[in-house]
Length: 71
Image (cartoon, rainbow, N blue to C red; front, top):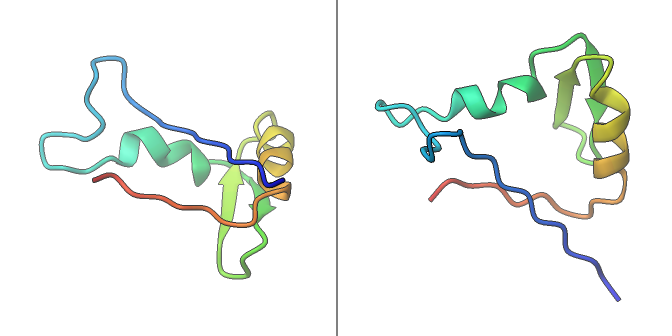
């Protein structure tokens, strides 16, 4: 049986985006570090800090698909 993992980011004030509709602050950590974590998709990788890299690598190691959006 397949497993489904859900994940949602939201700021503490309940808003996902800035007034200009930019959600960058919630996702900056995916590309703000020095350790590259590769996904199963060749053209998608993340750059996180050393403390986050093992957790993210484990999380995405079993992913068959990543579905993302904000609307």
